[in-house]
Image (cartoon, rainbow, N blue to C red; front, side, top):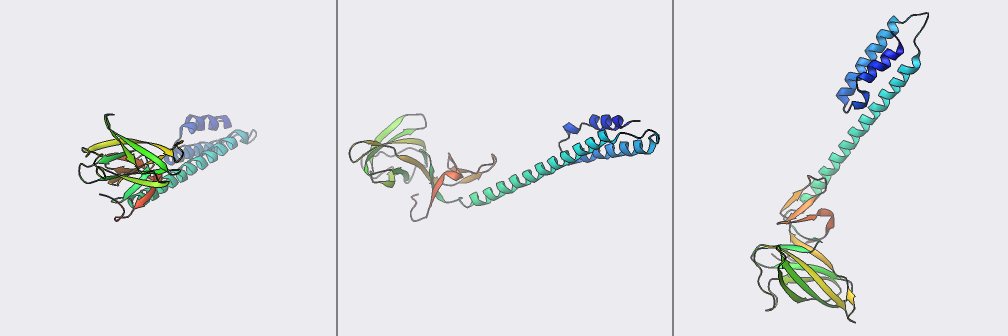
Length: 225
């Protein structure tokens, strides 16, 4: 038996196909058993060339390090996801403002539409339902910074909305009449948290928003039900 037998036997165990610690332990035990047998039965006048099985040992060592690294990374990812879930659970039952241009209406009460303007001027909001039907275009607050428009109600020009999901767009100009770019936000009560994709997603009724897009958690006195 020669050192090539050890290398061939180890290679046939599928070193490159090993994906977990159990498979690695089995293959490594088999390799050491073959190596020990060859060393015990080698011809003293023609000893084995140690180069090949030394290289194989190095290969096993590198593979073990990779498996340990993968295990460590998996543990880190799991820990991170648990931390994200724990942090996101705090949003449950809270009304949040997050990046987005839609809102869900329960059919009763009012819904605040929040948006931000880079400078003071004038603004209008156009609301469409889930089928794309234009519900109406309404005059909105034109102050610089974060603004809130309450739907439905506020003026006789704003009709009551039916229960459902809506999208809105904002058109705005500054004091000189030059177009400016508003930033729309989604506002709603957090009814659920989903971390199955690795990224915490908040459920605002039927509306889904990324937890990282939340810019404000509203206090009970400042939120509108």
